[in-house]
Image (cartoon, rainbow, N blue to C red; front, side, top):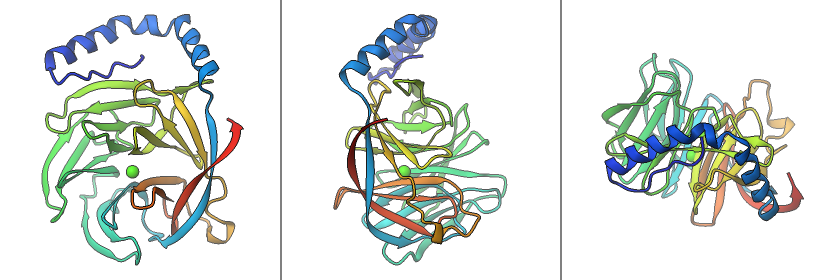
Length: 280
Ligand SMILES: [Ca+2]
């Protein structure tokens, strides 16, 4: 299914767009698609970026990181695992937990993002999302969705949710209606296992589950414009044996850097992106 993100706020138009996509989805899976992808290759080949660590912060090695967001020097982190899931506010520089709210054992926390004065958090298999007051961490309401929940970010208008596949879902943050879906692909076909997300300056950044790799996705087409290869970022010395995969991207607008960490990683890395001038 190709881009069917409905831009109109009119529910009627959204429904029409969805109907259009459903009707024509087989057509988009036809050879026309490969022609389209080939054309995109000629114009815009994915760039491979590397990284430079500019700062290192401590990270709780017991935190099974699922979502990360930075605002005003405070790191908002969502952690997973049943019985260990929580939403935390952390002083980035000291690593000290300022405030935290544990989730019920039945919930496995996943991504989180901030929209104005509210925190939006999703869960893995419960099809349940939570809206918290950003200051008090009180639960204001819950919402539901039809897929698994992996990552979530906000583009200024819609929540964008990943479910571990190649599809990103665009959801209205007030009505919780999914207004569109985006298939993510590159020159080799669909790009799946999209996990933690961060919307930065007109692009969607996504961890690829199981890899030290971030895709930078064009939100209009779903095409992966470039990759950030984070291979080796957590050194052998920092690996004690139980660290899991990269799974946290936050953006620091103060110096245009990224903050990245992983599940049970002892460190958060502040990085600058460096072009490798290589093709993926
Ligand atoms: Ca994030």
